[in-house]
Every structure is written in structure tokens, then in C-alpha cells.
Length: 508
Image (cartoon, rainbow, N blue to C red; front, side):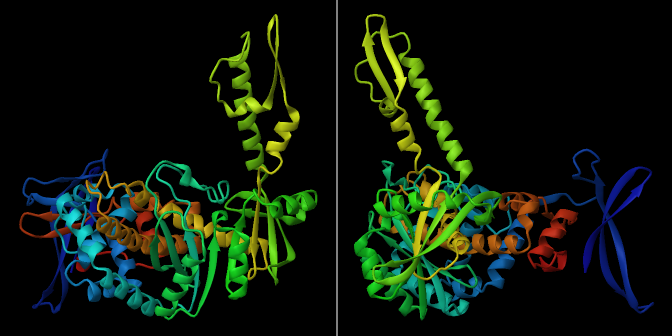
């Protein structure tokens, strides 16, 4: 057994490697100290002593240790080893990289040169491309993984998320952009339907869908997959793009549990907001969502022959932000037209409808169309949802917020779906890329759940967790001896809260 110790002598902090051994004469365990250098007072780094063996490598270790521990705790390592015995370590390395760095996958090779990996070694970009292709053509193996993973998790109740609103260049807000559909971007899109364990909150299964499928075929297929995975009960959580009378009726006829956002293109959402607008302002209907103050209420209603609930939400801060944004655009347009004798040709500013413009011999006379402005702001800050299963407005909001978390985790993957960064356009590579993102999502979701349970988000974000743990290094000397740098107070706290043992040299 060996470990690192420090001793301050005449203002200088010396670093020693303490090596344990058995003293036969005294018949007891003893330790022998070997000076490996001194601590730089400015940078905190170790300055090797001249007599010490020079370092062969210095690798980030704490982030790898945490992710590897989680992969073992969840059983992910065992399942990957059984289904993909030849490439399991490479799959995990790519997934670890995604959770740790959240950057394009083609940079993973550089990351493996400075970070500890499952079986050591690096992953060149060419090997990553080969790995994605290999995973993409192994459809049966991927399905076998889902079966074994579902069995390992023993989830009998799952939530199905219709991940359809993720686009390549947008950022999600946990409430402010509920149901925002980014398919308007002129970019390649795929839809992803996903099963999450209701107890563990870990992803269990996903399937990719073509284009913008919004009919019951997606739900029917997910139910078949759930049956194949021996999942007994499924609740569907869907964005407003899936809303239609036909879909609601079919889900009701098949007794499916659901929670769905209702668009304001329907009379249902407008009518319910108009009816309860004043009541929704009551302080008794207020609750907090990650620091956001939300008004929310539930109204019982018959939905396609079934008794269900309609939920109305109002976010005042969102309303004020959207109102201010609209007025700023109107002011800019007024400033542009000011002093002109006529409206410039080909003016296509959508804010033109908010102005009343008359020509005169002195130039344009501009006033604001207050009726149109009020009409545009009437439903800003509001959101409407329906469910035949959830009874509480706050619970329904939590379900939908979880959908946003999934979308956030897939943002990096979606940014690369045109495959430009991976220098490939093949469908098989896309399937391989999505599978690796799914493995990363398992780890991301486990960390997210643990950080919420332990209220760790008050002190750290996930990015800050990884940044802090990367400061824990493993140094390998030329003679093969490995040294683990000292575990800081913050690092020890993180390992404790995540339920992971503090690493020591004997675990290397």
C-alpha cells in the first residue's frame, strides 16, 4: 500500500510517496518515504526533485473514476461486456467523453491522450468512424442490449418521451421554451422516442423515427417495444406537435396514459386560458420550478369520453420578457421608418402589422396598432397541458420538464446529425452515433438524479463537477510507479455525495 503525503519544512512543502512494507524484525507494518519533489506555492503543481524518477505521463483521472464507478454501479459495464465483448470499452470511452466534455465526438481522440480510459490507449478519429459504422450495422446486438438493460433495471413502469423538438442550433430553457418546435430550421432532423424508468429515471430504450411522425404509429411501435422489453405500464409525455383530436381519441380508446401540451392554434387552449385568466393570478396557485415562480391550476374535464385534467400555467417573467422583446422590435421599426416619405419597397418586417402608417406631404405618419399588439400578447407566458393520468399541475409540469432534460442531453448529438464533423453521411453511422449518445445519457441521467436528491446543484453544475474532478491526476513515472495527486476537499465532497469511494493508489 502507498499514498502521497506532504510536509512543510522551513516554508517549503515537500511531497513524499509513502510506501508500506512489512518489517520482519519488528513484526509490524512500516512505511518508507520517498521524496518525489516539492509543491509550487503559486501553481500548486509538483516540482519533481532532481533525484526523483521523471514522469512518463500525467493524466486527468477524477472524472474518469466517477463515470467508471457509475457505469459499474448501474450494471452498464456488465451489459455492454456481454453484448459487445469486442468494443465495449470503446463505447464507454466515447460516452465518458461526451458526459465529461460535451463537445463534438471527433475530438474524443485528443481527449483520450490526456485522460485515463477504460483499458488505456487512445481513440483516433478514424477508429471512431469505424466504431460508429460497426455499431450502426449491428441492429440485433443493439436490441439485445436493450433487452438485457431493461432486465437489469427491472423497470415495470416507464415514461415514454416523444423527443421531436430538438434542433441543431438552439438552447432549451426548463420552462421558458416549453413545447418550442425547432423543426423550422433548415437542417436534417430525426425524431427519437424514448422510454425512461419511472423509478430510476434512467433511459431504458430508444427508437429513431423518420421525418416528423406525429401519428399513432409511433405510439403503437413504442408499445410493441415495451412489451418486448417486458415493461408492463407506459405513460406517454408528448409535445404540442403531437396534439390532434384523432390522436387523443385513439389514445383514449386504447386506455393509454398520457400528458400532452396543447398548442394555442386550438380553441381549447385559448378558451381555457380566457376562462381562468383572472383566477390563475391567485397567490395560492403559485409554486417554484428551479427558482422560477409559476402559477398553475388543474381543471377536471371530459377528454374524448374519458375523465381527465387540463392544466393551465402562467409564467409572469416570460410574459414580461416577451412583451419587452416585441416592443423593442416595434421601436426599432419605427426608428427605421422615421423621416421617410414612403415605406421602402420589399419591407417584410413582421412587426409592420403592429403599426398604422399613413402618407402625408410631410412624410409618414406612424401610430401603433394597439389592438394587434394586445392580440399578440394575449397568450404570451401561458401554457396548457392535458392528461388522463396526472392529477396535480405541479406533477404534470415536472413530467414535461424531464422531457426538456432529455432534449438538452441530446443537443450535442443533434448538432452533429448532418455528420459533417464526423466526415460521413451514412445512415449506419448515424445509428451508431445515436447509440453512443444514449449510453452517455444513462450516465448523465444518473448524475442529474443524484445531484437533485443531494441538492448539489446549489454548489455545482454538472460541468463544474467534471472540471473539479479533472484536477485529480494520475502520474506514471518512467519506472512504472503510479502516483495519485492529493484529493482536494471539494473532490472528497463530490465522491461522498455521489456514493463513490474516494480513489486511492491501490485502486489503480
